Length: 206
Ligand SMILES: Nc1nc2c(c(=O)[nH]1)N(C=O)[C@@H](CNc1ccc(C(=O)N[C@@H](CCC(=O)O)C(=O)O)cc1)CN2
Ligand SMILES: Nc1ncnc2c1ncn2[C@@H]1O[C@H](COP(=O)(O)OP(=O)(O)OP(=O)(O)O)[C@@H](O)[C@H]1O
Image (cartoon, rainbow, N blue to C red; front, side, top):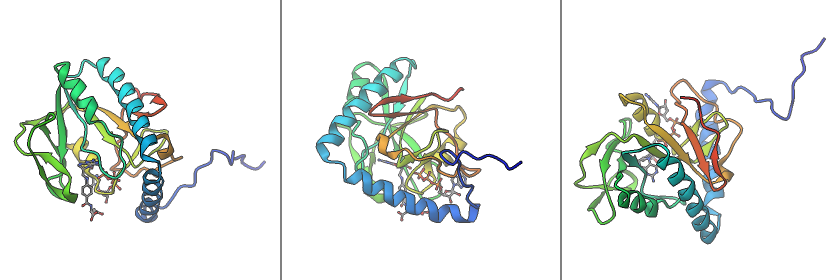
């Protein structure tokens, strides 16, 4: 009897040596698709993502939440940071200090001074270094096993691998960033949940 394979869901294993080139091509395609979303639509999806995030964060009893300064069409979550700050939650941004090093997180709220770092991404100039209990992580792509495809620096994986207490990691992206697999490698660490304009996608058991 021959083995039966469901070709609608079958995933080809990719040899590890081919994964970097595959990711590079997939990243380029997903970034292109994201940048072609009309900005008004991106803005309305961002608001929906922020609403779903707020709901999940309120349920988490969070004390320090890290988000990001948006680049390349990422969801705009700076208004959410202001909402969180008004509710007494401390807010932070990630800082990429050097390629190959984990991110650090510095406290930041609207109006605080920024400096530009790697890729000219603004980071808090004066904020205290903190360990967030919730990390909002922008994805270029994501898969159903909560794996994240980012810009290729390996920053988030290195950061989570280095953190003593694992934060709640909320991946955020538009639903068009969904792919069948990112071809996870041993260094890839799954997120806790993914939030798109349609809401929270099932949460990983902790
Ligand atoms: N808005 C936002 N801020 C963020 C992130 C993010 O994904 N989004 N990051 C999430 O991590 C960190 C920055 N990520 C970066 C990722 C890559 C490179 C970079 O210079 N890459 C090299 C190639 C690296 C390689 O291939 O080894 C390059 O483009 O030349 C810089 C910053 C922190 N801040
Ligand atoms: N914990 C780690 N220790 C050492 N190297 C790592 C670690 N995590 C990732 N890397 C390396 O970083 C590189 C990029 O990884 P990957 O393709 O997963 O990045 P990414 O998740 O898309 O990027 P980013 O998190 O910066 O947005 C790979 O070469 C990988 O081997």
